[in-house]
Image (cartoon, rainbow over all chains, first blue to last red; front, side):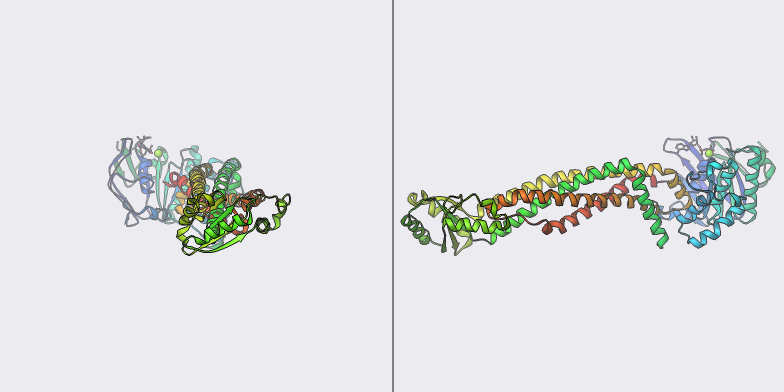
Length: 228
Length: 303
Ligand SMILES: Nc1ncnc2c1ncn2[C@@H]1O[C@H](COP(=O)(O)OP(=O)(O)O)[C@@H](O)[C@H]1O
Ligand SMILES: [Mg+2]
């Protein structure tokens, strides 16, 4: 589903953010990307999203090498993945419903399909009662749920989350992680970059650890830092 | 593309136009200035071209004689002209007829000449000469000027060459001046409208980056901003064509009579140049709008 082959990334500033990364995340898997700040987690995610290109190496998504994909095709690649970020990235002047529907509008879904799909995904993330509210009327956890609903509404085959709990208190972080887990159990591949050590430890999922751009550990049912 | 998407794109475009009133206004002003400049150049050039064409169809040489010549003196001139090689036909227009003709040409503006009487007016009697060969007009002029006795009875000789080359020079001058300034203003317009769109894009960069993550195509993201540019262009077109019409009528009222008296041809009606001007304006308005928005969006479409 997501495969990195000898991937290197050096930014134009000269920073080598990723050095010879090799890993493969299978369909339906749940994987954590862990590592301290500046270790290269976001860079890995940006390369999956095709927001950054690797300096060398190949990235294979859903069986297709995206290294030389035409820029015209990138939007269609992105439609196969949902993304959430630490800062939620909601549109403040749109309601919860509109924020989610927006993602469907953009991929030209029919109004009928939108009317059916949005309430369904809002109920999946537990926000059925808040469809008409605006982001600033919601808690951080609820805002991240809206972002999750938006990421999932077009039924992507994978969900990519870059520090989704970074702005949340521990209890709320747990709620979001459990939600990610249940999304994974419905068949969506989930990749989560995170700092949240205790959560990673307790969830016993696959852990890919990166340190200064180098993948130092890839543990099938690991904790955050178990062997180092 | 289904109807809902189309109405979404156009709706967003219009919203942008009114969201950024100040910069929209600036873009409108500069496009308006561009269009008026190009419009004046176009109207001027069209008029000169039409005059040249009319002149070319006219009889080649007109010899205006001095006032107060005796009948025998006139006969002398006429006989001499008839004797010149390559002169085909000579037609006399008396001073009285000259005034009548001038009034006819002015038509509804004839009252401009009401101060003149049949014997006291600036239009001289003349001989209108048709040539056997249209290219020999300069020979005829030389022949007349070579005989001192005839030359002193002549007030002025008009050949189409002198008038046409003069008009052609004016034509080139107008084109050079107005289209030169116009081209400069077009560039400035593209930059300023680009800036307007850039502000609109900047205000919505969050939305755009979300659109990109969700998989919106560049064309989908660009479309509302192109609509915004085009809407500004079309607004500028509408204002400009109205004002140009008003300016043209003012100029027509002021100069048409004068031109007819002096060179015998009047200005075109605004209706005659409306179509071409409208066409140029729409191309300019839409073109500047589209170019400005496409250039200014490049940066934001990366990611
Ligand atoms: N756009 C960029 N240009 C230059 N250097 C960058 C850029 N993005 C990240 N970096 C650098 O690459 C390294 C890895 O950053 P990042 O992938 O954001 O780490 P993490 O997400 O693990 O905190 C850091 O040293 C960071 O400063
Ligand atoms: Mg990061």
